[in-house]
Length: 227
Ligand SMILES: [Zn+2]
Image (cartoon, rainbow, N blue to C red):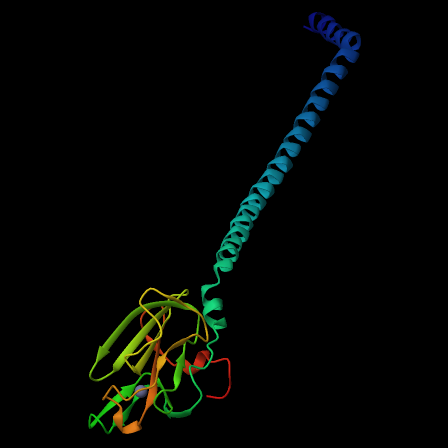
């Protein structure tokens, strides 16, 4: 047994000695390959994280971009500035005179002529019969009507969609339907033609309608503080 084993062991030892460098090289190659593989794996993982970060950042950038666009759109629609233009509308006074009626759309005002309480969504200025009534803002004459209650009434449509209504005028108006009128142009004259506010004496009953057709306080638009 020993005789047979010894040569085998000797052969194995000899094999080891002979191939020691080869075995070491194989072990080294395996070790290097393992290190390379691990390093590569780590790099892949880091790269993946970096991609994740980039992926997280990109939507944020995309979120920001539409937000900027959303902000930019109202800015581009703002130049229309309709509310601003409405705010900048300045009326000249239709005539000089004593205020005999103020705008009251949430309180009832007693109307002695009609013997009833009602809102008064207009501005009344007293003046002698024959006093000229001037257009308060550039526009176009939309209608001229005459009724027992409101006398002769001129409606002027303005560029911004607003309307000014001049009631209790004499029938001898200075304008015609469709005519362009400028701020300060004479529209007509004060007369005691209408009856619905006769108790106030001769005066202009001025109404202002906004674009929506709602009656608004005319004094909000007067450029003069002398109301
Ligand atoms: Zn009135």
